[in-house]
Length: 312
Image (cartoon, rainbow, N blue to C red; front, top):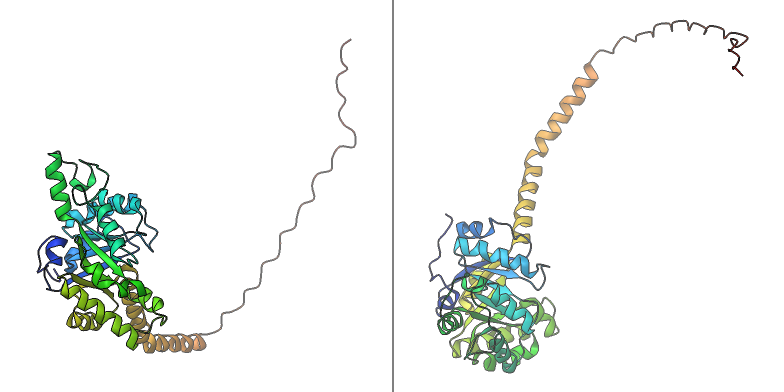
């Protein structure tokens, strides 16, 4: 194996420690082996996307089983703050829930209400289904176990989210503030300018809010170097790149090196082939044989044979 998880098996336990947690973003490939591939690579968690991927809930239901089999905890990012998105992800068995563009403490409280069972919330009851692995049990015990297990990641990716980040972090049931860096830069009016003083100030404010209230911090990172840098800043959920970009970049690098490495040999082979072709003796021309005479068809009889007269 490339690496083993050094933290506890559950997202709730992970969120309670500042030790680094490393994961991967799945936006394209929900194949049966994906959980075991990530586990073998040493991932502590997976972020499974519904906001930008096009995956539906049937795919989520299958994919979560793949990750459960490999013992990789799943954070499902839903496409909105709507109840039906939140509750369905929970019913499918999502251990972690990530919600985009959380802008206020009231929104955070409503999300908690939608994802938790009584008495912590008002989620509609569905028991002995996917989220509790189809097992029977006492209702009160199911509520307690499910509420203790589910982990909330609120995305801070708007100007309002930064403005209200301390109040959001203070909400009971919020476990992690997750910075959506591209959307945040757009929300601040500085698209893609991650070194801009205003963007850096927003990050600093969010990290301080999380630390004050004992909450985790997370972000998607494009490179190893950025991940290490952000851990030093205060981020502990480090989600390294995504399936599309890891495959694309690794393949592009390898194909580029193959082209470069074989360029000299390919040119030499081509030159040798050209030289050999120039030295080859010309082939003797072969005269085509004379065409055989075509026999004229036999003459058709001038008169048709007489037919019998029909009887009266």
